[in-house]
Length: 257
Image (cartoon, rainbow, N blue to C red; front, top):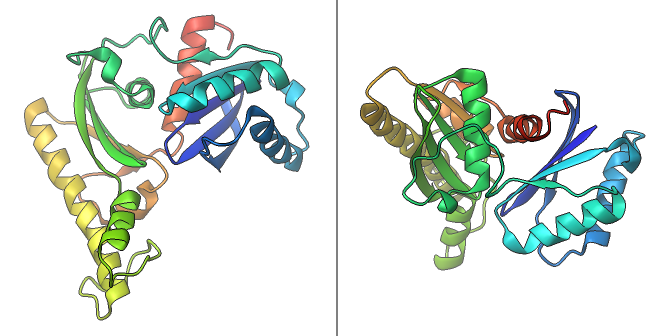
């Protein structure tokens, strides 16, 4: 089996593939202070819930946007899975031209999303990833990565509001019953949900104008399900887009699947 590991700033998402099928996935907190042994213990617990052992994993592929975590995952792979992971980065065959001024600046997760998105939906395509940051990525009709937009994520924006405004509480991110809030908490929830839905729709519409044609739009990321019901521009949600992109890259580089 292939273990796909997507290391984000807030969460690490794990996906176990049997051939090209995702059979199980987990989401754990990204913690820069954990050692490879601590991550291994956590993962062993997740595996054991499904009566799985580490030896079912024959290969590992990693996408990482948190540089201090990468050597920890590499050591974990070698020590507990007896394999060196394939790391998405320079020298990896992606099959997608990157038309960024400096391709090395593009986060690995954004390229992985673009690959999976184009493979499944074709182009032109806009991918909206709701993570620690909310990113918007454009892929051309011919499968070229064109660039995109980066905005603060909804979670860290609300954290900043709580930390910088003395009278505003920390809130649960859920949809309020009405847009017009009748108390502080529902007012903040309304601002978060509807404010981000409006942000998403405006950026998508402006990107559509620049792409100058009918465009597919797909969302992914941990908070996508919260915002998309209020969006006018996004109809498709694919929570496993990044994991599928890692599986595709692994296949293109090894031909094992």
